[in-house]
Structures are given as structure tokens and as C-alpha cells.
Amino acid sequence: MRRRTRLSVAAGAALSLAFLAGCSSQLPQPDPEPTAETPPPVLDGDRLDRILTETAATFQKADEAKDPQALDPRLTGPALELRQSEYRLAEATGGNAAPSPVTTATQVEAVAATYDFPRTAMVITQVPEGANLPLLLAFAQPDARTPYKLWGWVELFPGIETPPLIHPDTGSKQLGPDSEGLVATPAQAVERYVDTLNKQDSEYANQFAGDPYKDSSRKAITDLDSRIEAAGDATISYAVGDDAPQALATADGGAIVLAELSSTQTIRKTVPGATLTVGGEIGALLGQDKQVRGTVSGVSEVLVAFYVPPAGGEAKQIRPLGAKTVLTEVSRNDAEAPAAG
Image (cartoon, rainbow, N blue to C red; front, side, top):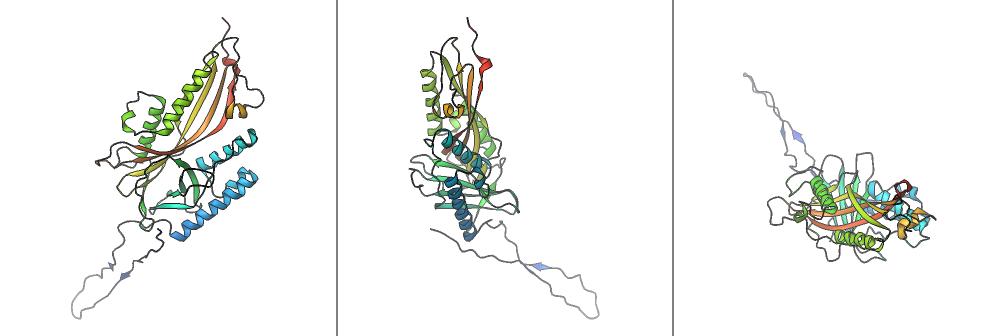
């Protein structure tokens, strides 16, 4: 399926000078060959292959040792935090919460076409061994002196149809957070999505297609709230992450956007004298004392991928493509214990 050959044309300029005897002449003017109207792809096939191979080797080395520092050569940003958090969970749960399977073996690849930085590359992978669904990986290069590193990844939703990506020999338009020409800029898409997560009656709800991540998250928190209602309640809130989204243009003029969010799940004791304890991953990170006296909060790193259609096209809704979430930290506040009546 791949691609790998590309011709590069070096632009040059030829000057010819003519001198006419007995009369004055105009200054000679350069006659350069035309330059390319669009920038070239930032990676050729061999370089992309090397990045993928080295990333796979980094995962293997770090996973075998459960060594977070071994991830640094090829992981950055949300991807680095996700994997480090998976190692902490594996240790806290005695291996019951193992790091998720990751592969860099690809089905589809896309790279930015730009002269500027930062630069992005994305790939849709094969199904990792031990998993059921392929992944979408995003790589980022912030500047010329920094190597490409894995910025983030999501597991694609079952049955999802990904939009056609532009062949890597041609390169995809690099999009920034405020790039226009879409039904929403990448930054707006993320902000509006967070609003729909926090409010079921969000004014932006109809701008998004069906979403397995949103549905499962709401069900999980509703079920938990019902189970503990005799002693307390459970809520969840979302926020836009610190890192700007990664985005590349698709063949139809839309965009694939990979965005960082955070979620905070709070378990609150509301009934004086009742006993409320937490289990699961939040309980594992709490340690031996799993009792909730006031509040216990678990913060998760969340990555979500979207397809954002082009403005003026037939498609109007932003379509979630996949998600990945990992619990990163847990805190407690016993001072918020309910007062006795």
C-alpha cells in the first residue's frame, strides 16, 4: 500500500548577460525556475519507518523494566503521562491493571507538509497483539533539534470509519489549534466537546455524532452514584488539557484532531455516620486506607480523536473516532466530611 518514492526538484536560477555595442542595456534580471506552490512532506518513508521502529523498541524496553525514564527518548506530552500512569497502576494493583497493548505496525500513514514547526505525523495501526481494535497514533516534532516523539494515542471505536488521509508522498496540510475552513477550529472542537461532557443539555450537543466514550463514561458514573447513594454521591467533571491539539488535514478538506482532556471523578460522603469505601483503581492508588471521610478525587488523563468536517460540506457533525483514558492521580480531603446532625 505504501508509497515511499518521491522526487525533489532543486530550484535554480540562470542568468544570461548580453551586451549591445554602441547602446545602453538594462540590468540583467534573474529568470528562476518556479518553486513549488505547496511545501513538501516533512518525512519520507525511510525516516517515518525509523521513527516507528525506534518507538516500538522504546515501548518494549520500558515495558519490560516498567521504567518510566526509559520512555523519554520516543514519548512526550500526554503519551508519556499515559504510559507512566499505566506503570503506576500496574504496580498498585499487583499487575491486575496491565499497560495497554501498543503497536507501531501501520495500516495507513499521514505526515504534515510544511516548512514550519511544530510538525505532526499520524498513523492508523494494525490491531495490537492482545487487543481487539487498531490505534491512532500522533507523533510531534516541536523544533528542528528535537526528534519526533509519540505525542498521544487512542483506541479507535468499534466499527468506526476513518476519513481518507492524504498519501504521505504528497503530505497533509499542517493545522494549528485556530485553523479555519472547518465546521469548528480544532481548539473550538475540543472546547465544545468538553462542554457536552459536562452538560447533557449543552448548546453544542447536536454538533457531535454518537460517541461510545461519552456514553460509557456517563453510564459508569451514574451506576457508581446509585451504588453509593446510601452514604454519598459520585460526580465527574472534564476540562481541556494543557497541550494544544494535534491536527492534520484529510483528503476531503476536513481534519483529524487528537486532543488532550482531563477528567476528575469525585466521591463524596454525604451521610454522617455512614461508612463509604472505594475500590478499583482509585482504591488501589489510595493505598491501605480506602475509607472516604470527606471526598476522594481521581484525576484521569483523557485523549480523544475527532473527525472535523470541512465548512460548507455535506457533513455537519464532528465525529468522535476513538479515546484513551488512564487514572493518573488520587487525592483525598477528610476536612470535607459531613457534619453530624
